[in-house]
Image 1 (cartoon, rainbow, N blue to C red):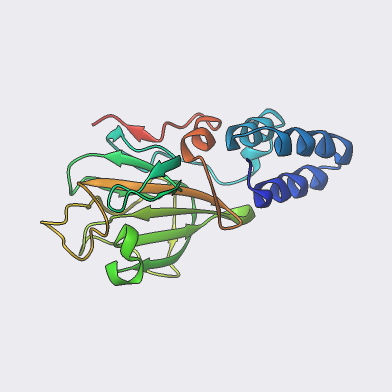
Image 2 (image 1 turned 30 degrees about the vertical axis):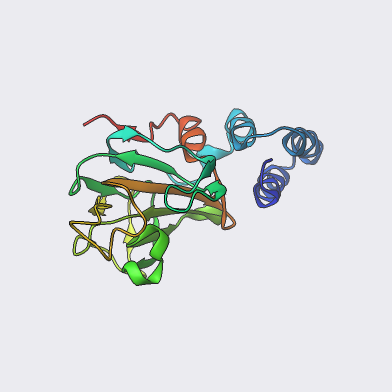
Length: 202
């Protein structure tokens, strides 16, 4: 189901443009259909997503574990995988996906599950999160302004290479999230509506 925060975001965006009736129709369809892609496709079709920051691919590599339900690879417990994993060699550059301000750039013990992570706030209640960042490679800190496509760190995730910073990871990859009002949406679907591929092949 589309997160209610995303629906609220749609309501604000649409009514800000004086389209209350159209907003109501969109909200009904969003709340009755599974998948965040429905929401972002509708917003894109109305030209609303173009009002925010420009977007760019966050890294290069191969798409691996997708957004959605899955069993935890360590515990086997079912849950929501809140982002899209992108696999490549450790040390691969990681880029800001859009203009924004760094909320935090924190070492492994701060967020054990995804190890070292960076969170960037963008306009309109949108944020992105970058997990399993290689220790010692962050080039941003909280409060920094970044632009789409600027390097912020390097990919990590290898527990032998980086036992603390890797977090719970089975190998080198980036865990990439898009959140609306701090609730995750499918980042692959979100960026595709903007004409951006989530990973560029190496």
